[in-house]
Image 1 (cartoon, helix red, strand yellow):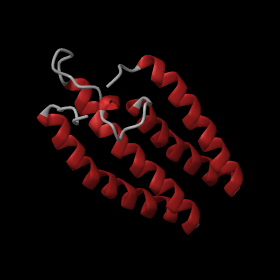
Image 2: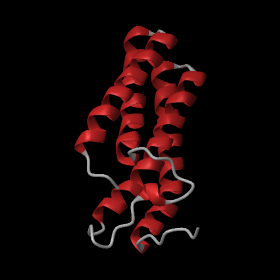
Image 3: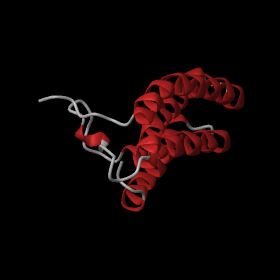
Image 4: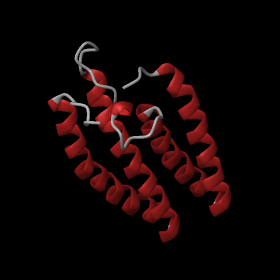
Length: 133
């Protein structure tokens, strides 16, 4: 089975998303580490934010391609069958909510749990609202 052909803008966005995700992860790590002074927690938040950006950017580029020319991201043989836009935004929401919860509660497990709940809820809501990419 051959790999599907994606619009050039999606391929370009996929390549650029790697650099953008790295920058977001570094910035999130530095910011959260300053806010909460917990390196392990900052690492979790940064990784989650970076992965969210990495998922969302190609999705966003894919949705911008006219429907008649669009190849769905889920048609690629190495990509999972989930909503990439909702997952990307959900992971970003998880990061922000978890960091905010840690600032207010100083509880590692509580903050991660609250972040996960917020991320899952946002994924479920967004996967039914956002167009498929």
